[in-house]
Length: 160
Image 1 (cartoon, rainbow, N blue to C red):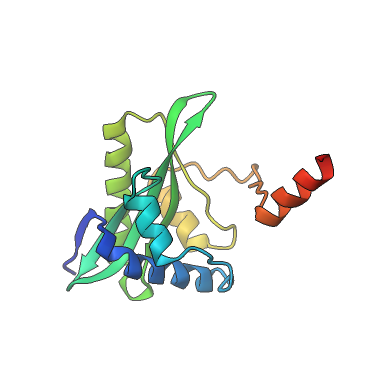
Image 2 (cartoon, one colour; image 1 turned 45 degrees about the vertical axis):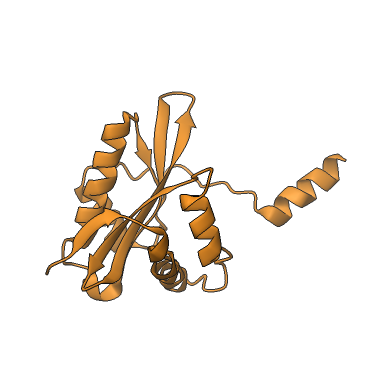
């Protein structure tokens, strides 16, 4: 199966957004995506670049993506966070996920980061198995903690 992995361009963001929506549907969160194509363009290619994205392209169609951004660990120093690695359903099992993860790891190594971290939903056993087969440590004893926009407003109102 022939595909190309490359750095994303502004023009790819419509297809990247489609992949993000496909993932949200897979994770049973189809109404959770708030980001727009314009947000992705501004945040990924604007004055203050917030993320780096790789895309996998087959026959001029984006069929996979990996989006990363910088973080800082108080224990390790500079790290990157892999927000999403998405492969279209029809391309799973072709080696495309491995090729995208390879690019992320090379990118992190080139940046000199101390760690690449990401989350995986606990019922996605194929993804967990894939990551473990690549040597990743799936830390099942840690819980993800989030404070969403409404939660932040409630928090601030409570301390005001």
